[in-house]
Image 1 (cartoon, rainbow, N blue to C red):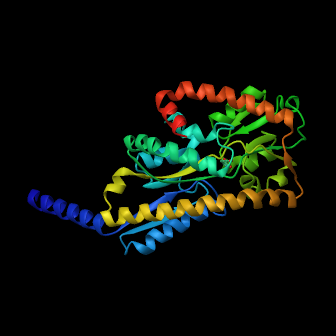
Image 2 (image 1 turned 90 degrees about the horizontal axis):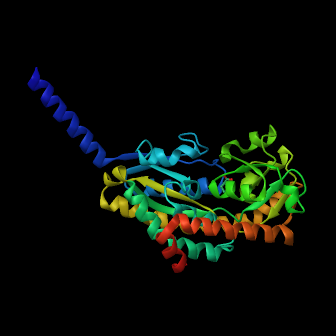
Image 3 (image 1 turned 180 degrees about the vertical axis):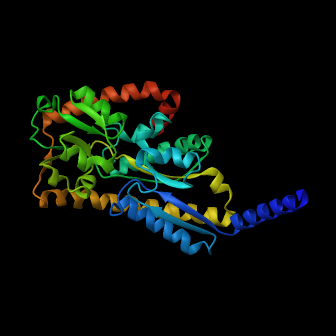
Length: 322
Ligand code: PCA
C-alpha cells in the first residue's frame, strides 16, 4: 500500500510538472473597467501573447477588479494568488518611494518629460520589484490630472474644507496642504462616493471622469492642472515567470514593449479626446486660474522636498539622471 502511494505521488508530481511545462494559464488582474484604455491595451497584450505562444501560455484578463480589487492586486501578484496584474504605481509609495515619483506635482508636465522620468526611474524600480519577487513588464501613464468639483472653484479658499477623493498618498498630501478633507477611494467606487455625497471633488484624468460619466453625479467642473502623469504598471509573479520557458519569457517581454508603446499613444489621444467628451457632456472644462496654479506649484515644491528626504540617495540618483 505504501509503495503504491509512493508511486502514485511520483506519477502525480510528474503529471503536474509536464503539464506546467507544456501549458500555463495566467489570470490577469485588472482594476479598471473593460472600457478603459489601460484594460483594452492589456487585453490586446494578453491576446497577442496567447496567440503567439504556440499554446504554451494563455493569459485571460479580468478587468474591473473582478478577480482582485485595485488595492489588492499588488499583494495578490506578489504572493502568487494572481500570476500577473496591473497596479497604479503611485499608490505603492510604502513599498518603494520611487513608485511615487510620477505623482509629484510639476516634476513632469508633458508626455515627453513623463517619458524621460520613466526612463530615469525604471531600472531602479524594476530592481526593487525583483527583490520582492516580481517581474516588471511595462508601464503606461494616465492622461494629465485635473481638478473635478461639484461647485465652481476660483480661489484656494473655495477648496477649503471640500470633501476630496484621493487615490494615493500624494493626493492626500495635496488635500492636506490645501485644507481639503481627503478620503482614499479606489476608482471602482468613485460614482458611489460622489452620488452619496461622501466626496465633492477629486483630482484625476479626464479619462476617469469620462469613464465614470461623472457629470451624472452632479460634478460640473473640470480644471486642467496637468502637473503629473501617474502610471499603471504590469507586473508578474517571479515564480510563475520562472515556470515559463525562455522563448515564452522573450515573447512576453516583446509584447510588453509593444503594449507600452501603444499604451502611451492611447493615453495621448485620451488626453485630448476625453476633455472634449467632458465638455460635450455639458461640463465646464477649463484651466485653473493663476492664483490656484501658483498655490499648487507651492504645494508641489513642499511635496518634492518631503519626497526627497523619504527617497534618500536612490531618489537623488534618479532625479539627477532625469
Ligand atoms: N485615474 C485613476 C488613477 C489616475 C487616473 O487618471 C483613478 O482615478 O483612480
